[in-house]
Amino acid sequence: MKLPTPSRRVRLVLSILFLLFSLVFYWWASGSPMPTPGLAHRAALLSYGLNPGPVVAQGTIHFQEITPSPYDDGEGSHWLVSRQGDGWAVTSHSRAGLFWSQPKFPVYLLTPSEDAPLVVVHLQYASAYLLDESIGENPFDNGDWYWEWVSLAVCTLPDVARIELYQGWYNFSESGGLSPRDWLLEYGSAADCTRLSPDSPFWLCQQVWNPGEGASSTLARAYDAQGDLLCEWCSYDG
Image 1 (tube, rainbow, N blue to C red):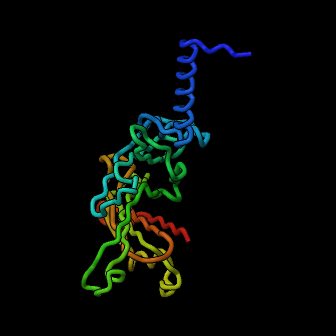
Image 2 (tube, helix red, strand yellow):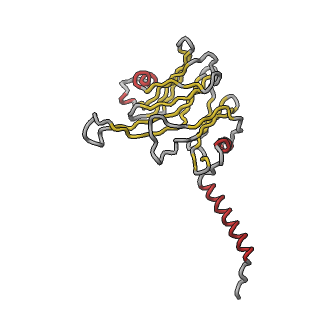
Image 3 (cartoon, rainbow, N blue to C red):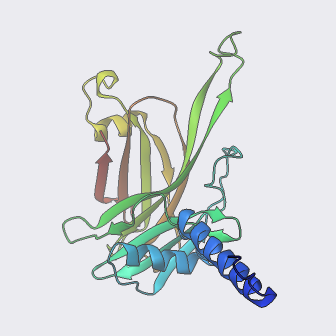
């Protein structure tokens, strides 16, 4: 028995349904990107069971000294900060064609307290192998890897006037017995942070780390207008 051939109208409807299903499947398989950074930020918070609050700070990442490779999706990433209870939630989203991807890293929750009023989080980085012909003739030995990191610091002290960031790769076996904090003060890459606005608790820092091997380590120090140290915060991923 020969089955009846679907009409042209039925075939058209089935084709449209298949196309819609394919688009939805592709959207899901590619990480559920969103048409705007704000919607991507909101979706990321909801996926972690957080209630999206109003966005209080945001920006676009452009590396200043390191030229990212074509495979590095950090250039042009958009970061956003929204209120979350007594703290803030931070996400960073890269381009996904015409859309914005979900963050590769988990949502960062910054919760400064009276005992710890200073916190830092890394937003994005780029790396490049930079050559130095003075090192030697061997093309495999005349350079080193450098990283440019974009970091966000939040400080809730009312009299903070300057935040300095020390960052680098801490290796205990090569530290000479120094703690991560003391090693950073001696050998870390140092840079001042830029306040987003006169009354903002958020400070942005962009710097190139010295080459090395080990675990990423960060030391933030907050000063008042007279240059007196108010507090410091240290993180070591080892």
